[in-house]
Amino acid sequence: MSSKLFVGNLAPEVTGTEVNELFSTVGNVSTCQLIPDRENGGHKGFGFVEMGTTDLANTAKTKLNGHELHGKPLKVDIARPRER
Image 1 (cartoon, rainbow, N blue to C red):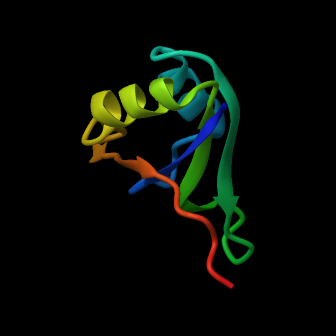
Image 2 (cartoon, rainbow, N blue to C red):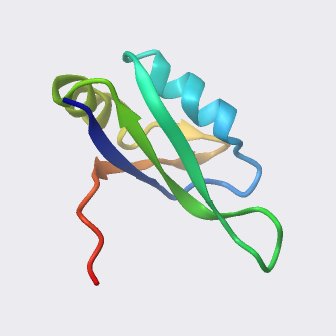
Image 3 (cartoon, rainbow, N blue to C red):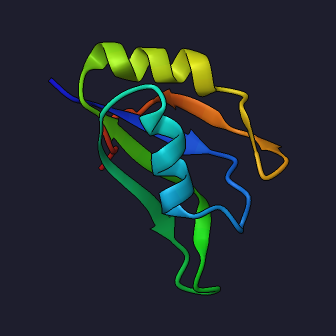
């Protein structure tokens, strides 16, 4: 069963490819999506990474939370279901 992670505090110049490659160092990444910002054409500074298993997601959270990417420490946590 896969598990989705919230990844926040992303620098404006960070790309989805960079995030995917970083999380791939922990294990299989199913999906990686940075949330687009329609106003500036970039991203909103956060996104979601889906790992192949819950264990991999927990390992990625532990290993990468606080990891600096482009000078900013990442905020990595288990994604919560979207509230309606």
